[in-house]
Amino acid sequence: MTNSPITRHRFDLEERTLEFAKKVIRLCKQLPQNVINNELIGQPIDSSGLVGANYREANDALSKKDFRHRIKITRKEAKETHYWLELLIDANPEFKEKIDILLIEALELKKIFLQLPTNLLNRGIGDWYLFDVW
Image (tube, rainbow, N blue to C red; front, side, top):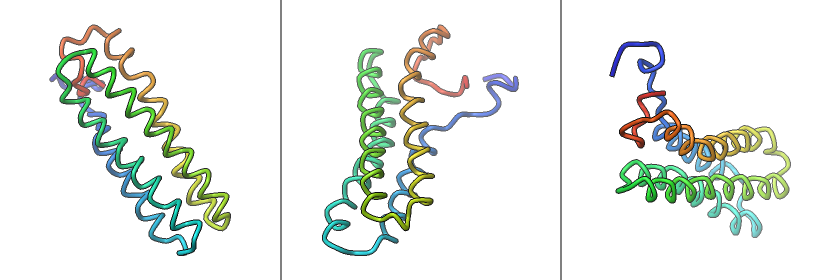
């Protein structure tokens, strides 16, 4: 790894996805307990956690095909988290501002995981799954 401005700053998606899941958990702990929330809360917690878990699995992929497949799953989990957060807003409009921040992050993660395999492979990176080139 060189000390160029591009490679010096590591783009740590493992940390970012972990923080995203933690923020979803913290939000869900704040929501009032009622019949609707009790049914909804587990869904975004599960899917947001799976964003990071599947991304970590992708980093240990055995092949390019395996990597692409796992990144697709990661993207789907981000999209699913976005869906459940939208439902939480409907059930808890008083939390809209807090949930909107998470919606933006879910959308950004979805976009990142949509472009990630193509961007890395187009750069001709030998170790295509390493991200210290960002």
